[in-house]
Amino acid sequence: KYCRGGYMPIESKQIIRYNLEIVRKLGWGHFSTVWMAKNLTTDSFVAVKIIQSSPKYRMVSFKEISLLEHVKTTDPSHPGHKRIIFFYEYFFANSINGVHLCLTFELMGPSLLDLLVQSNHCGLEQPGVKKIITQVLLGLTYLHHTCQIIHTDLKPENILIKITNSYLNELIDCVNSFEARGLKKPKSYVTALEWNQNKNLFVEPEESEIFSILKKRVQSCPSKTEKPEFLKPVMAKFRKPLNMPLLVDPNIQVKIADLGNSCWESKRILPIQTEQYRALEVIIGADYSYPADIWSVACITFELCTGAFLFEPYTEENLYCIEYHLALIWKLLGGIPLNIARSGSRSSALINLDSENISFQKIGDILKEIYKWNDFNANSLEEFLESLLNPIPRIRPDAFDALNLKWLNN
Ligand code: ADP
Ligand code: MG
Image (cartoon, rainbow, N blue to C red; front, side):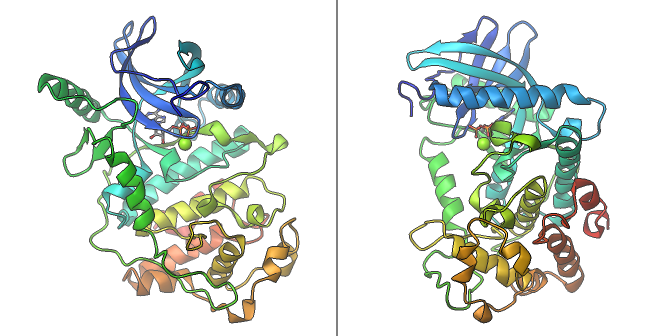
């Protein structure tokens, strides 16, 4: 994708704008590559999201800018304001691949997906998860009720951890020492920094390592070898944890990032949401709104606690399967109310389910049996998740109500 209309080729030390010097790559996504850069005027660091140069991506990113501007200015005193990534400004940069829209943001640290990878997909300890989810919900009270924006793509990789000064120093040291040791720099446009929890610093991954991390995430998820047989009882495929959950820095601060897929509540878009985090109403093609984000929060909570996806709706060939997804939801919730089941344009998928044969498996039992949680912890998390996974979006708690649920407060 480093071609005409694609990503901008970049080297460290490159001056991307008169006062902005590229330090190194931080990450990438469908739309962009994201770089750490030094503002030479203020001697401070920012993150620059450099959009692919084709007009299609530029158009969508202009919408992201209008949403970000709205979020930035609507009510800076709202406690949820600081739970959304802070956007500074945008500019254009030229490359051999075309003209790239560039967005600058406050510099953040690793994402929650990085933390999950660090945990070896065993998950994070509960007090840490509660802190993280509280902050995410606080961000959503602002995004939803003050800004009238639906995020539509909440998932661990789009929630970023605030960088601390010691992180930042490690990060800079790491880049400098790499250069001082005269090590051959990997091609900067294929690598991203990897955060190493054990060493507590950012490390330079091998070129292939970023792909192996992604591969590992796919492999470590519930077994792919069994074919989902929708007409037979669905088996839960949760992986047993290998070791202890990761301890989370008690001062952890997170922010919701990537408004690249977000929309105004009044101008909803389709399709939305990454499959594993997709709400029931979106799956069946019914009307959706803010509650779709709340469903994703439930999926993220379970994943942070256990290291495994709550729903992993893929066939053996790694293809998304709507019937399988609905069967997994049915199994976990013990059914789907008929009126909601019939309300979508894809409701016919439910007809293919042999629901009589889907056995009910409560979340609490999964936590006890597979993850060896004690009764109290398992039951309180179950209560929280079942509330956020209410199949009727109208009854699902909104971000305010969710903040008051027992699990977050005990
Ligand atoms: P896309 O819309 O292309 O998915 P994102 O906004 O999600 O782009 O950014 C891609 C990745 O870059 C993120 O998953 C994260 O790893 C990294 N990233 C994005 N913004 C920042 C930031 N402000 N600070 C540090 N890293 C960031
Ligand atoms: Mg993204």
